[in-house]
Length: 239
Image 1: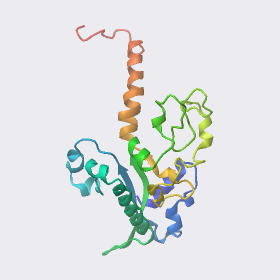
Image 2: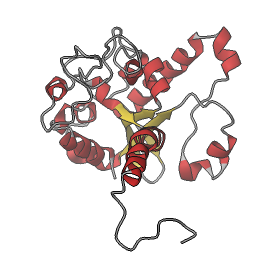
Image 3: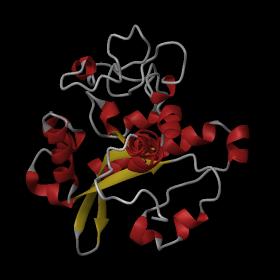
């Protein structure tokens, strides 16, 4: 799929018009839409050995590894990450506006349609003041980069409100989740709601999040309460 179709799909699912996205500002006519490649960035702190993750298959068939910085380098040179991100942002702007000339294919463009990552990556490199890290704190705090959902007994927008019309729903993308605009927020995406480029990583949300703590716990509770027992079922393996 082209970046245009991806952006249109994302826009429709988020209840907004696709024309707000910067990809349409750079390419207002349909002439070049079919030549805009969608790009999904993924960032992770990468604790431990990542050799198997990055080299188990050919990179051209799985992902394009942009850069990695050792912890020993970051401790002494904290400016390095921002410098690299700034270079990436500059290049992404050029890819969208100028593109690159490809033999026999003409000029090809590219547009970032999302920035995935784990909680620590988004929190650190987007300088988020609203994040899920506030859930475990004693004081109330905003826990979502997209809305005003918060924790605490006095919360006006409880994050655990699962009703059909939760209070936090009306606050979606009303304010920015950072005090100072981070470098990654300059990736061309949406001037009005730049935080929408932040995408939750299914691995961390499901397998290491909801699946591990909520769904798994609910399943165990149902089993203990006997909700899955039926007449004639064996009580244990030995039977």
